[in-house]
Every structure is written in structure tokens, then in C-alpha cells.
Length: 160
Length: 150
Image (cartoon, rainbow over all chains, first blue to last red; front, side, top):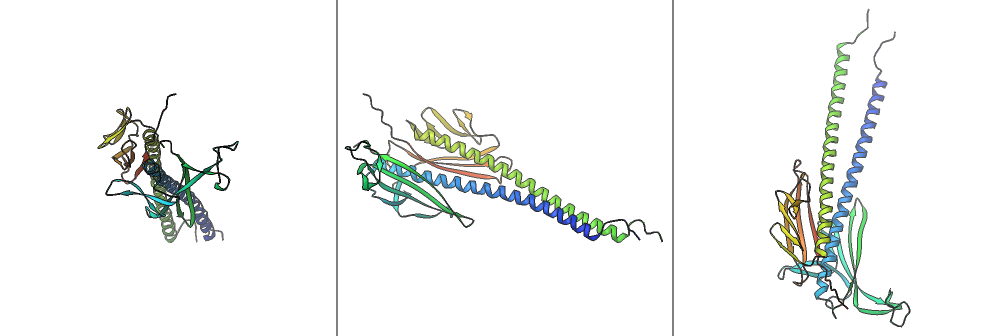
């Protein structure tokens, strides 16, 4: 005898289709949220990078010879209320990031060279005492993946 | 025996399943709506942050004169001030009315008085969705510019 209505298998198939659609929607929303979050981390890292470079620029306006080549990070000298550079790499910045500012000697092609003044490896040029390369690096780990933003600023001393 | 129609147990099971599905889908729709709304509001705050960062960085970096006081930053002839939850530039709002700016704080950590190095803190939240908030902390140093005449 035929009975109208749904079989249990039909109900189960409907539920499976419904849940598949729901999972697909939530998965898409999850992806969008993760992207938004990642974009926020990169943006914050960019601001930290900017802070490092801008502070270093201001410090070198006054203290050109104080800092030799190496790794530093910016901090505020609380007694003077001004920027300073501390040795090493700053970790756990806002619980997530590590930050450093690398100071490097700049070498250029000598005056006698047809390409004089061009920045080259120090083995192929002369040290330019009036130039320094500042490289800012901010790193963090995001869902087990290493992330990094970096930038460089060439400082040239003109008020000798 | 006429077996057409539904038994009470079938009706009850049907109603139970319908109610469960209705509850789950309503809850999910509410969640989706909430997440979507919050995401849009956060996006607005991010956009405001980017705009302010760009405006302040470019302005301060290449400024000839700089001064600041409570809730105010003066860059050359441009006056940035916090007024009624909006940041104004020379009296005209440069932040949208949907964003409430709670704080505009400026500190100078420069190593020399001629070239300032400012840290500008701006705290903001959405006017309607107060749980959506963000902050901007941007550091920018005034460039030393020497114009020589020959």
C-alpha cells in the first residue's frame, strides 16, 4: 500500500543539503573575516615600521656618529622625553610583533669611476661617511605563518 | 481502513523538525547580519584610519611650522582640531559623521627643537555601534629642508 509523505532518507538528504549550504555560507564569511583581520595586522605592522623609521630619522638629525652599524629598536627616553635607539631586537610589541632597525654603512663608487656616487657593495666602492642606510623590519606569526614588512630609508648628511 | 492524512505523532515530529530548522536558520541569519554589519563598520574605521594616517604623515613630514595643543594640531596654515567627535581641517570635517573621534592627542619626542617628531594618537568608535572601536598611533618626523639659492 502506498502512503503519501516523506521517507526518512528524503528528510536526511534535505538536512544534508541544507547543512552543506549553511557550511558553505559560513566558510565564506569566515574567509572574509580572516582576510579583514590579516589586513588589520599588516596595517598595524606598517605603523610600527613607520614609527621605527621616523624616530631613527629624527635621532640621526642630531646624533649622526653615535650609532654604529647594527640592530636597534626605537624607545622613548623617559627622563628626556625624546627618541633613543636601544641595542637589539624589540620583541612582543603589542604582544604580536618583533621590530628592529638596522643601521648600515653605505659605500659608493669612487670619484674616479665613471659611475661615481652609485651605491655599491663595500668590496667594490668606498665608504661614504655622509650616508647611512636605515632598514626597518617588523615580523610576526599569523596562524603559524611567518609574516614580515620592511622598508629602507637612505640618510644623507649635508650639514657637515 | 482509511489511512489518508497524518497521525498526531507525524504532525508533532514535523512541527519539531520545522521549529528546530527555523530556530537554527533564524539564529544563523541574525549572526550573518551582525557579522556583516560589524565588518562594514570596522571597514569604515579602517578607511578613516588610513585617510588620517596619510593626511598627518604627509602634512607633518613636509611642514615648515608645527604646533599643537589639546585636541589641536597646526601644520603650516592648516588647523586640525577635534570638535564634536569629528576631526576638522580649517573648520571643515574630514572624518565621516558615522565615526565618533574620542581623542586627538599629540606628543613631541624630537631630539631637537627645530625638527619635531610627533606621535599622534587618535581613538575612534562607530557612533551607532559603540562596540566597534579602533585607534591610530602614527609617528612622523618633520623633514629638514634646506633650499639654497645660487
